[in-house]
Image (tube, rainbow, N blue to C red; front, side):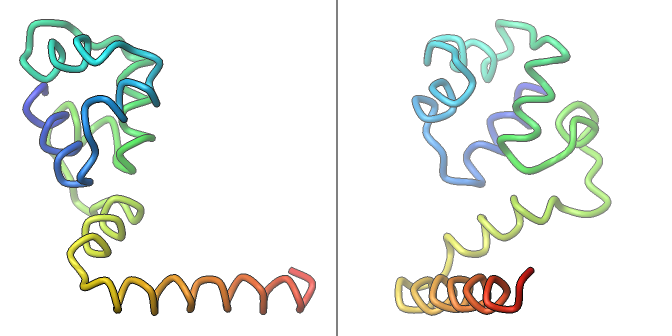
Length: 104
């Protein structure tokens, strides 16, 4: 499981420091978890899954019948050129404003 945790973090281009801050852990704890030197509690696993936009099942067993939408978006978005990223951000902002103007 520790390899999948590390792979999920790297796929999202997150640093160990960022993950540690989000999880309320020391960076050295993340290092130990990813090295397989520290076990992960069920509540920690749930928090990792939420942070990484995936399921606990995927992190534990490697089963990913459908990649989490958030993780997939983050991964694909990060691979786009800056101009394409800016266009997508503009579209999201437009859609949000439109939805708000329609009362929903």
